[in-house]
Image (cartoon, rainbow, N blue to C red; front, side, top):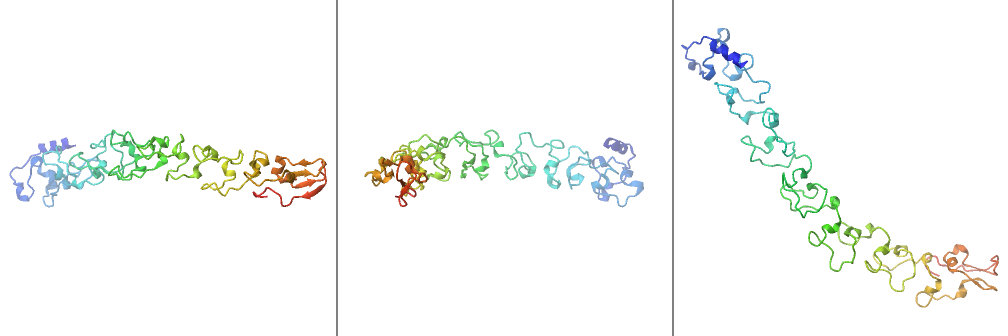
Length: 347
């Protein structure tokens, strides 16, 4: 189109006797060789446009093509009258987003390794050059470690806690990595990988001797022992080695501590339960442990023959351990021990 236009212009007869400078619109470049009637249609001189767009509208003369940068500039802001090519790009009057042109087709766009972001180019770059750019985290998309991987940008140091969490789970500032608020939720591996006395606080010198990981006894909130998170039996720790266990002379029982001891702060105030005892009564009911009880107080029959209740019978009153029978047929009850029982921890 341009070639045909300029060919017709140059083929036209040009009147060089008229001084166009006197009109306030001096001719230069390609305008000098343009025939008068190309602009002064039908010999009408008055009202001829003096702005580029008045003629360069793709009707009278070539104008902006479909892929031209969206801009409010007039042609001569960037182009000269000698040729369209070699134009001086002026971003000042460009409208729309930068990536409307900087899309890799119309003009150079983001490289394949560019940081993923929804921000427009002008948020970080100037119109003079791509570099140096002023980086902004505002509209970065995706995970931090997509860039903070030690290659594109600074990543985790070698002694960083092992975690699957993204950087911003702990590092809330985009200015510095320091001042992070630690979050245990994404940490992988055992506690002692960090809580070793070097990377983070570890076991104190007087700590209970144990190979268990910190979280078996401790919570992530503080070092104070928390029984709520303990799994398994009490005597796994309360064995006299890991933690305080049964003292010498403790009742012989296979029951776990919490069967009788309901307070995790102290062992005192336990509620005794005879159902867990594994030895005969007189092992405890002697002068050393509990009140001595004559065997005759556990008679089952008045006899003859004299029959005593067994340990299993005495553990459960529903087996009529409070009844004294007249003989070995156990059919006639002579006495009921209404005040003699083991329920509630007393006689």
